[in-house]
Length: 196
Image (tube, rainbow, N blue to C red; front, side, top):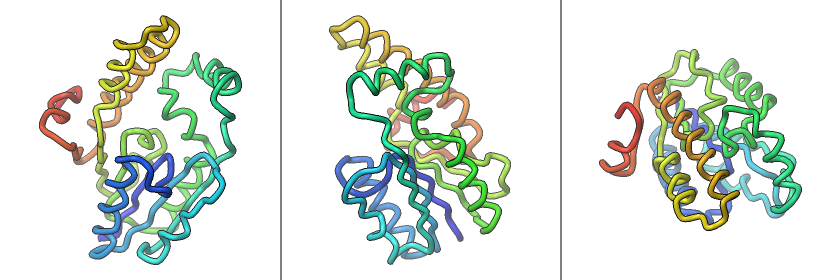
């Protein structure tokens, strides 16, 4: 089975639980199946994604222009996004040229399965492509952002987190039903998704 694994935010360095989990599952699948990793992420020094190439059939790693340091430049970027219905955590990476590049990969290679790692890249997945689609969730993202909104002391951050929570929950309701399968970490997560 030929697999296309689509991941936003990059995979290397292994500095978060989600990346560590994805890395080990990807390596395990690559032992038994030819896997293409399509990943796109904010450019950073010491990009070591090439280290993944030896166990993959193909690596498509796309470093994106940085969005700016945290602070006022990131706030301006977020302000530009306010009119979008897409969650900021998806919008900031799911750029039109990335979607086009993924479509090119799919047009030049036949895949049996497209694995969408987290819900975030779901906005660029070619849902009409003939392969089966799996969304591999790590969390119920809308719920996590709502928890942040619930505990935020600053009213502005509470509003920002609440808006992101609602948008992510809407994205989960939109994309998860389109997948042939949704993999969750736990029964509690499975029950926490809309339409579960």
